Image (cartoon, rainbow over all chains, first blue to last red):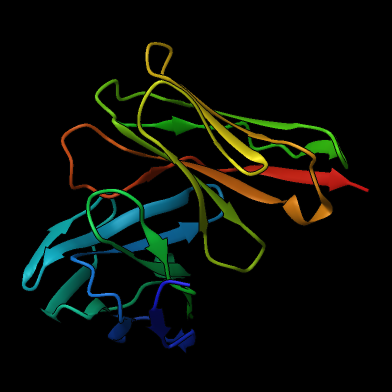
Length: 111
Length: 112
């Protein structure tokens, strides 16, 4: 298995609170991605990173920000969580713009 | 809008038969194509990648790509109950670094 961990694995939070999800890799891969998965929508790209401090927006980036200060860590922040951000969040890594390997996921519930 | 379409299923196949999963994509500039398997409550697992027209075989799995028809398929031979899962088709759109665009997946059930 690719060395990817996500924390926390489960979180329940209230509307309006900030939330940060962490993705950590031990593979030294250049590319890292955040996706969300929702019934009826499938997996959708939120943000991605192509190097330390290099990030860009994906399809559903509104309400989310990211940071990557080290190769191994990619953080996803919900500045003010809303119920529409209740989802399962997956981090993925890739050595090049090709095969992506997914972490175990974080189930986030915003009440 | 770059789209990837899959039949949601469920697709029911008897054990030992060939399961055939199909996917179409809208972006003619796409160059890289992937199949992921996802068990309920788990993360997607990469099972096949294909980059050029034709067939690519790996064990019981065969991926087929037809860029002219914008069509990707996955064949699973000698289907086993453990193959029961949702299969996700994913594409890297033309223009590069935007991550994967996924279909919504096909739910496959292998009947013992």
